[in-house]
Image 1 (tube, rainbow over the protein chains, first blue to last red):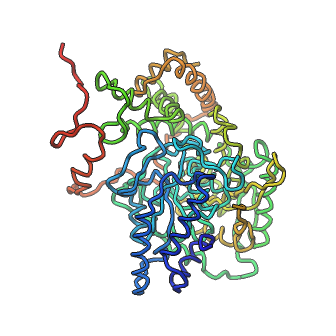
Image 2: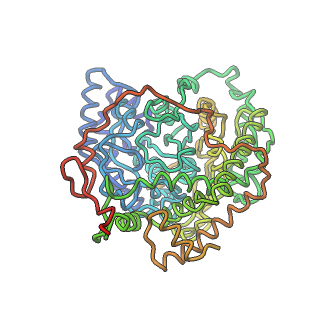
Image 3: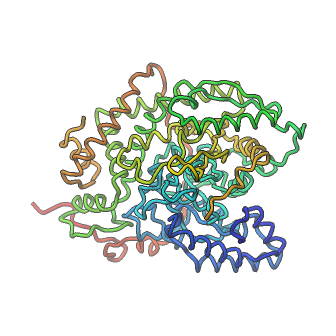
Amino acid sequence: MLYKLTLEEAAKGLKEKKFSSTELTSNLIERAKKLNPTLNAYVTFCEDKAMAGAKAADERIAMGQQISDLDGIPAGLKDNFNTKGVRTTCCSPILKNFVPPYSATAVDRLEKAGLVLIGKTNLDEYACGGSTEHSCFGPTRNPWGADYISGGSSGGSAAAVAADMSFYSTGTDTGGSIRQPASLCGCVGLKVTYGRVSRSGITAMASSWDTVGPFGKTVRDVARVLQVMAGRDDLDSTTPDVPVPNYIGEIDKPAADPSKPLSGLKIGVPKEYYGEGIDPAVEAVVRSALKEYEKLGATIHDVSLPFTKYAVAVYYVAMPAELSANLARFDGIRYGSKPKEEAKDLVDYYYQARSEGFGDEIKRRIMIGTYVLSAGYYDAYYKKAQRVRTLICRDFDEAFKGVDVMLTPVSPFPAWKVGEKIDDPLKMYLADALTIPSSCAGVPALSIPCGFVDNKDTGAAKLPVGMQIIAPQFREDLLLRVGNYYEQATEWHKQKPGL
Amino acid sequence: MLSLEQVKHIAKLARIGIDDTAAEKFSKQLSSILEYVEQLNEVNTDGVEPTSQVTGLSNVTRADEEKRFCNRDELLACTELPVEGDMIRVKQVIKNN
């Protein structure tokens, strides 16, 4: 039952020699392999590598040379993070056999901190989707109800953490791909400030939006993982030289008034994120979290982000444009699968390799991107979207003049049924309406479990709901501190699906 | 509404082979997405600069020094095509006559 521990509890147990990393790792792998046929959270297991890594960690611990709080802790990582020697597919047919010759910077840093990699988690192909149904390995199922989607694109990571199949995990968040699955599966997920964590070695989706962040069972666990991954990297020129705070230190800083630890904190409630288009049951759950924050001493303020309603449209121009450029490198020549049939010439080879190698959602997005970037349409679509993006960024600048953080729902509705929105791409896109605006502005946002709504079909089972806390750029420290106080005051994060 | 011909042309530019059935399906789906994003035209953006970088970085440079990144064999091992010496053999690019 070691798999039930949080990352911090597991680290403490290792340090105090209550159990070994070998025991922890084999227990976790056993759990993950038992549930995987139902949930499909993992697409690859690397058991031998994991057991060797656990043994090495045990030797370090025995000699009192534990490298970090993550040393000897097993976890699975999203399968768009390059892991040297371990298959990395992006859940795309063209990369089904790809074994990368190098690891992403984030993976290197985690491994240097003692990560025991047990496998790779499922995602929508190239992180494009909100349900993990666009994976060539099939959908990841929600731990709270296997008929339901896990959210996406990092659905495998979110489900793995929520179902105790991983002590922590990683994801990428371009328009909501960490926050939304964390919310729908019931775990904590952090989308960092653009550039806070290096993206080197993680397959690019939309380069002016992509971020890399952690999933955890608690806010504190997320802080521990972020600590290892964050900071400047010479291999990613978009990581600025902004100092990385001691996140746990910030969380643990004593409050002036312990009975009202958040007194002085101003929480903004943007009106565009409530009401129309939001499931009333979801809204009620999030509003009760606001009440909890008032008890903790925070004050609630109405704010407005007037350009919110255009964010999805901005995203669905800019993102496919950038995606189509990034995915141009997949030609099945230097790496990736070659076509089944003999091609006539090189161009025919490209047509075949990319037709067989990409799923429909990727083809749609590449074609939209190609269209909006083509001669005569660039100004009308791409440039226009970038101008509206500026207005959305200004919305956030203005709002943060009056409040410290903003609190909203993560997803307008709880998890939906597998297959329900698969034939209507636009409907699926609107599920990201509340996460895209902060991606637009590059600000960090934390998704935390804050309650449940009834499953409308059975009435019995419950589906998790997450709230989103948004802060100004590079204020992950504030998000984690504010999130941790809520978690301490409530029990939502302790509720587990019956698996 | 994108016509079938337009969809096929876009697919060609993107080097994605598609047949008529796929072109028909994509034509509907792509059109509905493009119709949705048309709403951006409601917004007055006169004098508004476009945003392509959100944290204020510009022209990030580094020292022009050679760095070794994987070795040749590791990189060549990634291809499924025949390798001859240091090169990957691909289909003919330019045809005679």
